[in-house]
Structures are given as structure tokens and as C-alpha cells.
Image 1 (cartoon, rainbow over the protein chains, first blue to last red):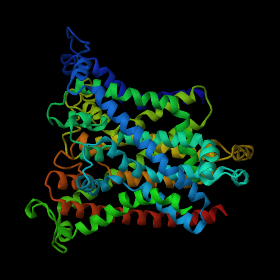
Image 2: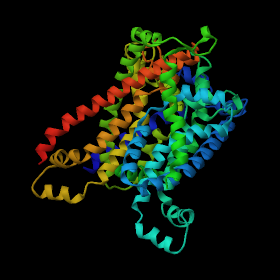
Image 3: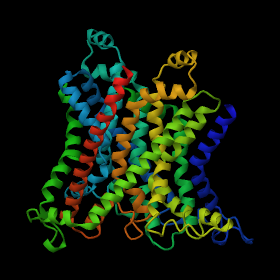
Image 4: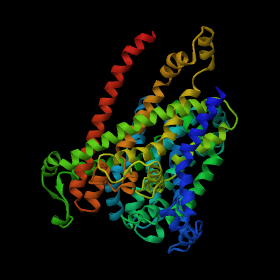
Length: 272
Length: 288
């Protein structure tokens, strides 16, 4: 059994990392080595692709910063709106709360890609295009269903006595939330924040249609632009270097917060 | 209390309900370069065009094929991965984290990575075929098989998410159940059939529903990996709607395509739900 299990683990790791490792390998290969991988080439390894990516105009780290900014602002906006809503859902009468939760589940399942056209018109009429901060409005909205469902599950686990005690102490609703309830669901808030951050960092169709200014592109759109620049010759070496650089922050995030992501999604799925 | 729901409710109305209503309205209007990008009522002309639009129906079948195959493969893999990650062994945390990496990366990033892996003749797969003396796979240039390449890309990216949901389900199953059945002499296969699978059913249903809806709206992967080609053999409904709006600047018809896709999805969910009702009923009697 242990041998068999080790085989499965190796297979899983190969499947998960293989395509990424191939990008890593490609990113260090010179162009000659890429088109003739088995032939003996004088200059096989190179850093030229990384140099090209970092010295391009705008430089690559710019996209990372843009994505970081959008991710952070969307996450904050999402939590500010979703925390009170989730609390309200646990305290409302079931005949409101239950249909509300069903609607939220339906919205969470909805393939939001279908909304991009109407959202684009909103952006045009309100002049929200080419504005990174404005991008966090649709992101926060699209994240609401999942965020509220996950946070509701956490609020529901808190004993009601706790809030009653705080009320007897003379704390108002806002104070109870701020000082008692929200600190107690910090783990669920963390995992929700990470999921929202990942979504905002990775979102593509809305960023694609809202942002056209090259210096404001988020990472996914910038990567796709390299692909779309020509159908016939994609600069695969430079692209692989960009993939590696763009993946590092997310890989670190997942490695650090693995427990939080797993527990957040699992507890949400159990109760949702 | 209802005030606390206000901002979230407003945001959801603006981003989910308003666009859907807007689409329904716009689908009865001509709104393209011809009309000067102003909506002009054209009654049901868009919808008649949709019903006769071969490309729409071709994309609908392709999207459905993509969604069903990719979600089916994904759930099988996810179940295996979840079972593996649920067992206790050293280094499990690290492997869980690594298994999550494909899901955490932006789709567009690896979409192009896959294009390179499937590249003819320089990609590793073709190189391997060449080294073995096989003909080139030509995976991205033959309309009959390119969709399989997109399925591979999608399965790679989204299996971890499905595995997480199933892992959540596995963690709710009390270990005593297995011990009891094992004392009665049940093998691991019997345990899996009689305990794991039945208790996992709600989570399988959740993962299935969630992934099916998302796969039905596939856009990023297809747009970057194949651009819908070759010969629009991998084009999805979302991509067709996007092309209508952004390339052909026909917003009225794009709205009709979106509305049509939405109705198809609704029908699909309803069908799936009825099917699951039909499937679960005899099962429940068996358990009793």
C-alpha cells in the first residue's frame, strides 16, 4: 500500500508541476535550443528572455503591481460589504434568509463571463474604463456570493449567548461586530480574503474589456496580449520567462496559505 | 438588520440582475455599426437569426461537449486526488499545496503554456512523438481533435478546485463507519462503494453543478489557447458573444447570443436537476 501510494503521489506532483516546469525549462533555453532541442547547440542556456521581459516597455513588474493593487482593493471592498451582509443573514428570519442564500448560491454558480458585455456598457457610460480602482467594483460584486456564503457559515458557528452578553454590556450593533464577532471569525475572513484576492488577481474578461492603457494592464491581460500579438509566432521564450515571474507570487501565496484555503473552502462547502 | 444587507444587495442587483434584464431588452434591438451603435427596436429579428445561426448551434454543441467531457474527467481525477489527500501520510501538507498551484494561476498564463507544449513541431509532445518515430500529433491544427487539447488545459487548471470540494466531503465521514464495516469483513472496495460514495453524493453534486456552469462559460482558456480555431472548431458560446460585440461591433446580436446561452444553461441545469432526482430516488429506497 505505501509503495502504491508513493506512486500516486509522484504522479500527482508530476501532473501538477510538469507544465510549469516545462515553462521554467523553456525560459532558460536560447531560441536555437528551443527549435532544435535534441541537436547540439553552442549556446544552450541563456538569461536573455528574462532580460527582455524585465526591460520591456512597460516593464513586467508593472503588471504585477497593477494586479497586486486591484487584488488588494477588491478584497478590502468585498469584505467591508460582505461581513455585515453575512452577519445579517444569520440573524434574519429563515423565510428571508433561506431564499436569499439560494439566490446567492445561484449567483455563485453563474458563469459571470456572460455579464461582461453589459458591464462594459456600465463602464463606458460612467467613465470607469482605464481605472484600476474602478475595476474593484465589479470584482467585489462578483465575489459577494461566495464571500457571503463562506462568512455566513462562520457567523453561524458562533454561540448566540456571546452576542447577548455583549449586548448586556451595552455594546451597540456596530461595536459588537467590530470588537466581538468579526475578530472571532478571523480564520474564515482570512480564507475568504485569499479566495477573493486570487479571483481578482486572475480575472480576465472584465479586465480585458475595461482596461486598454498598456501601463494599467493586469497580469492576465498582459500575458494574453503577448499571445495575441501574432497568431503565427509567439515569442515563447520571453513568454515562458513572464510565466515564471508571474507565477512566483501566486505559488508563494498558495504555499503559505494552503491550510487557510483548504479549511476555508471545506468549511464553506460543508455548510453551504 | 435589513440595512446591513443593503450594500451587498445593491451591488448584486447592479452586477447580476441589471445585466440580465439589459440583455433581454437589447436582444430585441438592432445595435451595431449599421444603426450607428444606437439601439433600434427590431422586434424578434435577432432571435430568428439566432435560431437559424449555424455557428451559434455549432458553438452550443461544442461548448456542451467541452463542458461534459472536461467536467466528467475532472470529477474522476478529483475523486482520486481527494481520496489520496484525505489519507494521513508525511508531507501531505506540502503535496496539498502543490496540487493547488494549477488552480491558483491565471488561466491565461498557462493557456499559452499549453499552446507551447502542444506546439507543432517544437513542443515537447511532438518532439517525443518524433523521437519515437510516430507522426506529428498536430494537436492544435486539426479541427477534429483540437478541442481535446482545450479539455486537457481545463482539466489541469480546475481539477484541484473540485478535489477540494470532495476533500471537504470526505472529512465529514466519521472513521467509525469504516471500522465497523471492516470488522464485518468488508474490503476497501466495499467500504468505498457502501460508505464513501453514498455519503459523498451531495459534494459530488455540488462540484458537478459548480464546474458544469463554469465550464459552460469557458472563455479565457479558449480565447488565448486556440482563439476558437482551427476553423472555429473550439469556439465556445462566450467567445462567440465576445466576438460579436468586440470584433463585429454587433451589440444587439451579442446580447441575443448571451441570452440564448443563458436559456440553454438554465435548461441544462433543470435537466441535470431532474436527472439527479430520478437517479437519487431508487438509491434512497435501497439505503432504507
